[in-house]
Structure formats: structure tokens, C-alpha cells
Length: 509
Image (cartoon, rainbow, N blue to C red; front, top):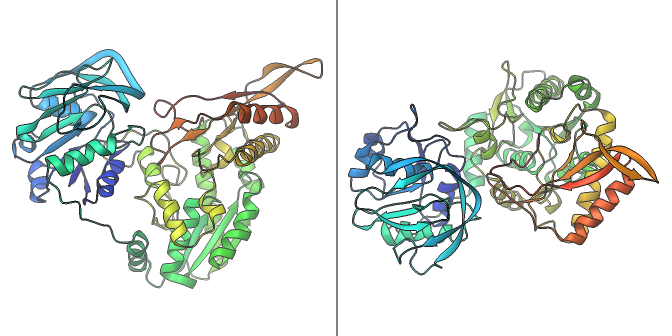
């Protein structure tokens, strides 16, 4: 199975859903010719979404040869639209946009929707729509804003949907994909992947050979799992370097030094760089500039540590880069650049290390499963995801020592109350954001105050590529708000972010 990537944020997720159906999948760029794709002898092709509009000059196109080849083809979002346009249908901007949860109405008992409810929740992310289906296609689904939200040509085994069935928020998305793959295409659901850990261990041994390696631990699960894999591969050749940049949440630096070392037995060098990072961030308010500064200072800290670890140059640096980091930093074919992750787009141009990134094709939930398989403690594996730049990008405004302490305190309260309420596994994470450059009027102690607002951003997600805001119990929210405004000096207002991704990102910045 080939997944043709039109610059989608979710291309890897589509491939993963196919693998979950026990069918081998491989991602190829849309720039690959139809001849090259057909030479791979795929059983079928899935066309991904993408950020472009099919009717605009320079937008990715689809070679009609693919659609005339007799191969089954399934289009998703942009792939749905480009299929329609290529076969003579009409695509345009209607002025009506759909983002997030949407109700789909199914019009027929077609192969895609056979046995499924006539109304179902789907995940939309589009501003353009198919206005007219190509000749020979039956419209099988619609929404209130999109009359052509699904179509099928049963005799040619061509089909598509405007929504994203690969996203967990599409209630029956996986069922729709599996119906097409198994019932329409006739795929044999018998493929199982070999162990991710074993594959990566062999790859790392080949890449590194007998050279020394350092791993930059950030305090999160990603770098911890990456380090555990590399240790399995090269053993004593690895030294982990924990750069304490002063931007972590309360208690996390201590947890890295204690729990991670205890679980893995890895050699750990701790670098106290708190003042160095604060000085570098002084006066900086732009989030992209913050990311680049933090990325640069990380690398400089690793370079200094490497000189202390070995007399000879250390050639390899391990990072816990994930697929969402790569994609959102413009790493895919035609992918929109949402932000420069400190460990991808934020790396300095004069980087002296060769990077080892064993998690680069994985999502967070896959990383967690891998971490448990490698024997890491649940306290590390299941901690809330945390951005590499840390609290530096959760402070909207300049990063100062006082603001860090304020946010650390508020964040600790939120995490404690979510834990006490048994919600650790119910939510993906709850970023706590300080609007440092905003002063909100309040009344505290019978007097008028101008304090900072704190934003709670609880989200539910499987992979961080999409997210929905978590419906937390009101009593939990009330307790968090009451404690923060009473216990954290300088905060007089707590607000709740109820925006899905898209259109909003998880982090504020």
C-alpha cells in the first residue's frame, strides 16, 4: 500500500492506520512519477491531505495515469479534492470552512459505510470543497456545509472522503479505511511489523560503529526512550548529558537524575546551564527566536560536555525527535512550516554532530509503548508531554527567573489536582501558560489588583497531530483556579482554552 504525501500533517498517521489494519504501507512524495509508483506494484494507493488549494497555480497535482491504471485509489481531504479535479469534477472555495468535529450524514449503504450509522462524527480540516463529483461517482456522504463529503465509483474501486478517517476523532474512521482496504481492495490483513526497537538497534549499530555517542536528555519521555534504545545498541559508548536549562517543571530535573539513571544504569553527566539560558533569553519575546536560542544553547552545552567526556571528538548526538516535530517544522514534502522545533528547525547551522534519531518516524503513543517495552518506569513514560524549549515558550513574553518560578508554581498545582482527580490518563496533557505581558484587573484582599492571567490548555490526543480540548469536571477546574489565584502571587485570573487542533496548536506561543 502506498500513501502519496501531498504535504499532509497526517501522512504518517494514515500509514500507521493502514499498519494497524495489518497491511504494509509506505509513504512516497507526490513528486514521484506515476510510473515510479506503479513500478513498486502496490495493491492500492491512498492520497493524503495537504495545505494547498487544488485550483491555485503551483498546487500539487495528480497524474491521471494513476487513476486510469486500474489500481484502487482512495483520496483524503486534499487527496479527495485532487482526485475530483483530475477526473473532471469541480473544486472551489465556498466561503464555508469546517474544522474539528463535524456531523456526517451517510446517503447510501455503500461499500465504505455498509453497516455503519447514518450519522457519525468526523474530523474536518478544510476551507475548499468539492462542488461537483466527477462523472460516474456516487455521492455517499455530506455535512451541513459540504454537500459532497464522500464519493465512490464502485466499478473502478475509486473513492474518497473530505474528512480525516485516520484521526481518532472520526468515530468510525478506522472502520471506513478497513472496509475499503479489505472489502473493496481485497488486501490480506496478515502483515505484522517487526519490533521497532530491534530495527532501530541494528540501524544505530551500523550508523555509529565503535564511535562515542552522547544523548541530550531533555527531561521528557522522548529523549529518555531514545537514550534507552541507543544504550541497548552501543552500551558503554553512550553517555547521556542532561542540560538543566532552568526551564523544566517543578521536580523534573531531580526525576531525571534519580529515576532514569536507576532504570537504565546509563552514565549521566549533568550540566547546570540555568544562568546561561536565562542570559541568552533576556529581552526576547518572539517564540520562534526563543526556540532557536534554546536549540543553539543546547547544542553549545552538548559540545562543551562532549569535550569533557572524551579526549577525541564525539561524533554522534542522540535526540528524541518525533515525527510531529519533523512535520511541523516543514520536514515533509510540501508540508507547511507551523513552527521551528528546537531540535529540528532550531538547530544551529554549524552543527558539529551527526544526529542519531531513533524515534523520528514515530508518534508519542508509539514512543510510550516502546518505553514500557524497554523497561522505563511509568513515571517517566506516562508523564505529560512537555516541549523541548520547556517553560520558555509557555511564558508569553520575556523569560525571567521570577516569571519561571510563578509559572512553575501554577503548573505544579494544576498537575497535582489533575493527578488527585485520577485524570492523568484521561488527558493528553495540560499546558499551563503565563500571559506575562498581559495584566488583568482583579479584586484581592478588598483591593484592586493587576495580575497576570494563567491559561489552562487541557487536551486529548493520541499523536499530537490533532487534539481536542478535554472536558474536565467543573469541580476540578474550580479547585485548580481557586488554588492558583490564592497560592500563586501575581496571578488573579485563570482561563480555560476550549479550542481544538486544528485550528489552534497545543502550545500557545
